[in-house]
Image (cartoon, rainbow, N blue to C red; front, side):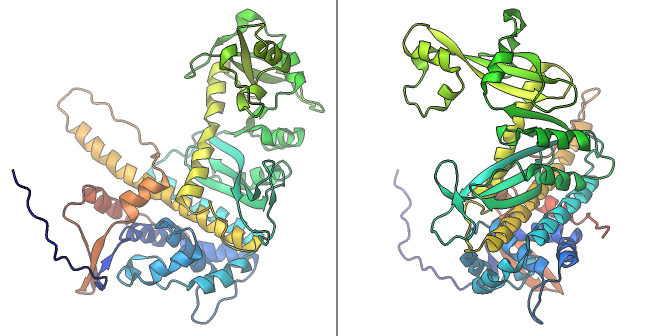
Length: 486
C-alpha cells in the first residue's frame, strides 16, 4: 500500500496576530482577578514600604505577577519576558496585560526589600486559605508543616551573597516551610549557601503559623537533621506545635539504640526489609518529658556495601560494624535512622508519616524545574530574593489551578456515581491533586488558541482535537464562581 505523498510546498510564517500559545493564562488571570491577588500583594508591599511606581508603570504587585506569569509559561530568565511582550493576542487573557521590558524588570526587582518579599508570600497564603474555603476543603483538619533547605547553584563570583555550600558549590540557600496537605509554600527565606538553616527555623515557623486559617486543626512539623537543635524544639513546644525531627547518627544515638531488645523490632510500613523500634531520649538541656526516639533499621548484606568512602549508605552503618563487614568477618549488618518526636501513636505509623516529609522535595522540584528557581538570574541578593518570591507565587498558583481542575473532575465523578444504578454508591472525598508544575503547564497553561474580538467580548477558540478541552472550559467556569472578601 502506497503512502500518501507529503506536500513539499509548505510555507511557514509567524505573522498571525490572533493566535496565542498561552491561552491557559486566562485561567490564571481569572483566579488572580476573582481573588483580588494583585491588590492584596500591593497592600502587603506598601504596608512595609511604599513601592516607587512610575506614572505609566506597574505597581509592585503587578511587576511580581508579570514575572510569575512569565515563569508559568516556562520562562526561567528575565529575557523570556519578551515572549509575553510579543504575544499581543494573549494580552487580554493575562492578569497583567502590559509586560515590562526585561531591562526594566531587572532594574526594579532589586528594589524589593526582604520584609516586602515576606509580606507578599504571607498575603498569598491568605489568598490560598480563602481559595480552600471556597473549594470546600476542611479547615479543621490536621496541618502538617514540612521544613527543609535547598541549594541553588550559581556561577560567577559576582553573585552578591552567594557562598560555597558543604559540597563546595557556589550557591544560594532557600529555607522554606510548606503546607503538605495543600502543597503550597507558606514561608521562605533566601540566604547564602554557607548559612545554616537552624537560626532561621524559629522565625520561619512563626511566620508560617500566622498564615494558617482560623480554626485550623492541630499542627505538627516534619524536619530533617538540618533543624535538630534544642532551640528549634523549644520553639515548637512554646508554640504548641508537635514535631518529628531526624537526628544525626551520633554515637549517643547508637548508645540509646542498644537498649532496644531484639523482640522489640517490628516491620516498617511500606518499606521492604526495614524494621522499626523505639526507646526514649532526652536531648541536652531539654527540661520537659523524655521524647520518643524511633529507630529504623535496614539489613544490608556485606557484599552490597560500596567500597567508595563517599557512599551515603556507609554513613548509616555504625563504624565498628562497617569495618567488620568490609573485612568479611560478618555477612550482614544494619543501617540505622533516628527520629525524635513528641507525637503519640504507633511507632511504625509515625515513622512512615515522617518519611513522607520527602513531599517538600516535590515542592522544591516544582520551584526549581517547574517554576524557575533552578537559576538565580540576578546579580544582587535582593534581586534574586524577589525572583524567588515570583517563583513562589507561580508555584502556589499552579497548586490552586491544579486543585480547581481536580475539583471539576471530582464533581463530574460524583455525578456519575449518583447516576449509578448500583445501590448505595460510595461518594469519594475530594483531595488536592498531585499534579506537578510541568504537567499543569502542558495541560492547562501552554494551550494554543485563537483570540477573537466581537460584540464587546473576547472569544477564545481552542483546537477541535484538544483532548482535555472540556476540563479546560469547566475549570474556567469553576474559577468564575470564586469571590474575594478583600
